[in-house]
Length: 368
Image 1 (cartoon, rainbow, N blue to C red):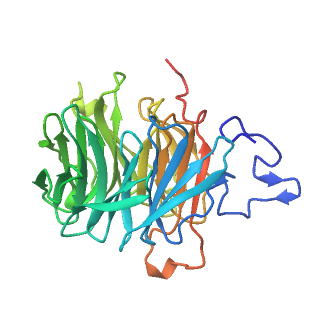
Image 2: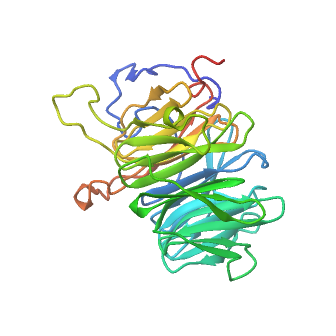
């Protein structure tokens, strides 16, 4: 079967030939399972860049490892290699040519993994866990940006043990994104800083948070000219803010929406509100996916301000997500995120990464 063509078949609606098959709550959307997933909660996922032939997926986990799979066109996944840190891996990214993967860990180091030689070497050091890592490719420089709980944002040229630059932040780095020439970092205490990366990185603007609760994830979006123009920011309170950097009409153009909440319309019962764990924009359509601690993913059109789809509920939170370079594959990971504390942790539960055909479901409804 071709995973990334159209899927059809018996039981696509959740009931199989022999009655109800939806008891399989770990994969209610019947998506493709990635083979040999990590042995502990999955923290981050990243697909290879368009410069590489084929599709390779990287996943980092709380088992201190980073794994690489090849995703074939028929949906088969082939484990290729893995590397270790000495603490949980919190973030991963690719170099623009696809030859290297960068990994950030609670062991206070970041590493560069050369996929051709399968060697990993340390390229960065902080005084606290490194929460975010991004590759920056500028016309006059390239470097790795690391954001840490030590309240610094550092830039490394991968060849020197010392950073090219270190910028102080008001608080611990919780999430970040880079689309050259823009970077955005969200910190503890609801801090929000935009950086410009041309010539050399510098602070561009501090923004009062549009959200009232702890920042959890951030993702930059582009305009029709493919230039970064704003970002989506998710919080632990089931809400996403769409924020433009220089909107014509800030009061109208910037908005927030609720998501990842239970019994939405029923006002008589209290609402369960879940964290938004990750946000990813579709590389072709500019629509977005959110995933949450409620165990669902949702697809949204920010321009039409509509929801395109919400998944069935998985039996575990969804911790990370990403699209491949052409937007045909949506990857998402299911594992415990400790959002309900240790008493809800079940070590018997496996962790999963699922792949879904995303070509159709993320198209805007009325393409202008």
